[in-house]
Length: 103
Image (cartoon, rainbow, N blue to C red):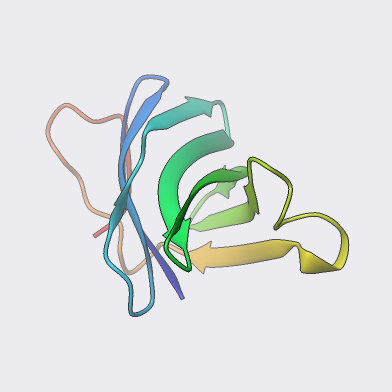
C-alpha cells in the first residue's frame, strides 16, 4: 500500500510517500498542473540509490498513480506499477494550501 502525505501550494507539491513497512520518502520535486501530478522521489533498492518517478491524475477523491524508476528498470511493460488511491478518508485541510492529499 502506498500512503501519500502531500500538500500543494499552487503548482508546487511537497510531502512524502510511504510504502507499507518502509520509512517516508520525501518528495524532491513535485508539481500539479490541473489534475496532473508529477513527483520525483529519491529512494533505494537493495542498498542502491534509485529515483522514483511518479505520474498520475487526481479526480475528486481518487488519485491514480504510475510509478517507475528514472533508469527504466521498473515501470515499463509488464513491470509497470499502477495504483488507485481513495483519498476521501485521508483528506485534510491545511492553512495556505490549495489542495492536500493524505494524512
